[in-house]
Image (cartoon, rainbow, N blue to C red):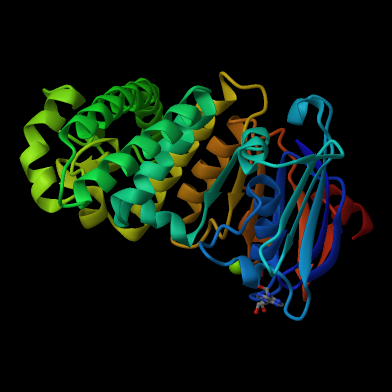
Length: 373
Ligand SMILES: Nc1ncnc2c1ncn2[C@@H]1O[C@H](COP(=O)(O)OP(=O)(O)O)[C@@H](O)[C@H]1O
Ligand SMILES: [Mg+2]
């Protein structure tokens, strides 16, 4: 768990120190005060980048050359490698330190602090392209299956090589056969990892949705591996070879996988209301975080931007309840203090922070307010 954060030059947060972080941390304040920026800062600590794709330059305060986030964790988390520091410059340099030691690969950082983001862009998971859902799936597999990352890299390499051969008019058949075999082997493994993960995810998602939206009956989550169901990848590649040669690239495979949510047989993205979609997205992300909490020591950190938007009070409270039960650390924003303060099941005591013009101050708890009032 993160206990302390220092934020330097992240958007409008020029110098912010957060102490006394709790499991549930609520950031409230007016529009433009810096609430999302706080979440961005935590995201940078876990992923070394912004959660808005391609937003690296705007992550740094205008007119400054770099930003830094420094986090201290409680005993036991980050596998004893505390503290964590990430610095990014507008020129693209990234420096990461774990326990005072420089780390070269971002994946090491990602492994240490798994993050789940729930914001307006999360609707992409339902309404966006399959790429967003594959990324979601990969994230989950990556965090529960250590061998996945290396396999995924191998798959990408094979795919690139095979596509290169297909692209060039004069085909070297024997070389193509070699790469096809490699690709088939790797692709089947990727699928097996994903399938095994999906078989954990689907029931967990169903259980959470039963609580968040019991009225949404017949909600179904399905996984598509990216080629004809009844075939092995190698068989499917063989069958698809003429088309691959004609088009000049590999049509089918794990790079085409998808997950689909349906309600009563209809696509959730096309039939559910915006609020219901948000609940489904919450359900997916809660299910995923819950699976990490199991096999891995450090549960993931949730960054939830403006939960009350699109949700009525009752559903908002149900999501908060589910978040609290995960035992993950949560950073969550809202406009008015009262929007989220009372949403948590006892004995959860959220830490309240007031965000104002790029400054963040700890707001007294309910009891304290009562005493001083
Ligand atoms: N790179 C930047 N440098 C300085 N200010 C920025 C930068 N990017 C965004 N801002 C400003 O920071 C303020 C806070 O943004 P944000 O954290 O999104 O607010 P909110 O509290 O509504 O979530 C906004 O006024 C925004 O214009
Ligand atoms: Mg915001």
